[in-house]
Length: 172
Image (cartoon, rainbow, N blue to C red):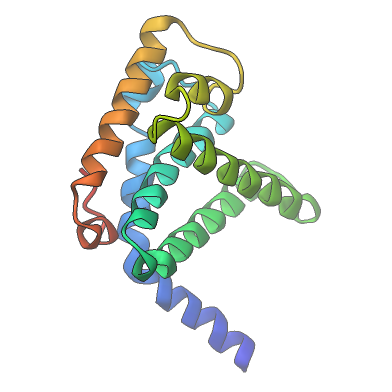
């Protein structure tokens, strides 16, 4: 019984964060990222773009203090659940899904660190995007400038958006 209770309580606990996760996915799926920004419109490219948006949201919530640690964890759990489902839909078998999820979480952690450093001015954001979002293959200058400027602008808009609004799924 406790396994079922924990499963359903976890789902219940994450329910208020579903609008935020939906907003993150919607932002990461905007066609401009793939057209003007030249992010590959593939399973990996979509993962990378959603991970970039999620990373910026998590960086913002981290800056808001300890009160937002639990919501950050819960929205990350929604991301993991979504990626698990996407992998299974793509035909990845049960045996290897866990390994893929582990690699995805490591990638997300690396991206958060790289983007945090770049946005703090300690590293070049464009270089971090080439390494992480474009997986080492730089797009043309205009596409890279578009993505860099747009993500930096999103980060700046998040910084002045109340954390409660972000938690409610109201991304700037």
